[in-house]
Image (cartoon, rainbow, N blue to C red; front, side):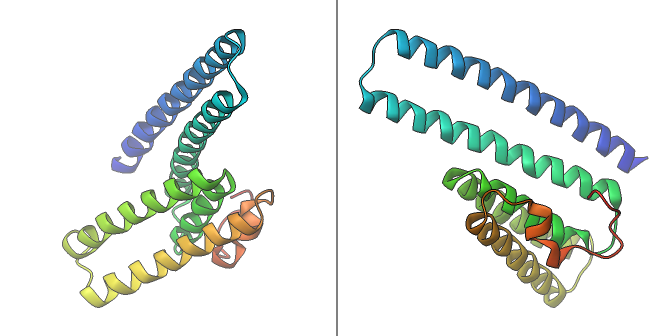
Length: 171
């Protein structure tokens, strides 16, 4: 029941994130049209395009992490967390430099909260907690490296070394 409730809440958050992303895109397009009609110089327009690109990468990367987290919870397969860590970081990095930064920040925050949760809630030993953190960090870095090297490739292929054999096809 707890997992069903959590997935329902994640679904609502995902729907809200998609709605907000669409609203941002609409406003971005309106803003660009306004700028074009005002005959901005190339330098001004380039600066604004960079800002818009950064916002797109931010929302896209957050969406990547939410989608991958939902899929990981959905399948509940042993060992799938490293795969989804790596996959989320890869996809965020494939969006560009800002996506890579956002992926790193999200991953680092997640690892920080996991340290506390693993010790206090899961009652893992400090050694096991630190080993888990190290493995998660390695998966995160690997995903970002692969996403940077191969920005147009399928993330599932790029991070296949972390894919558990028990994970159903399509994930």
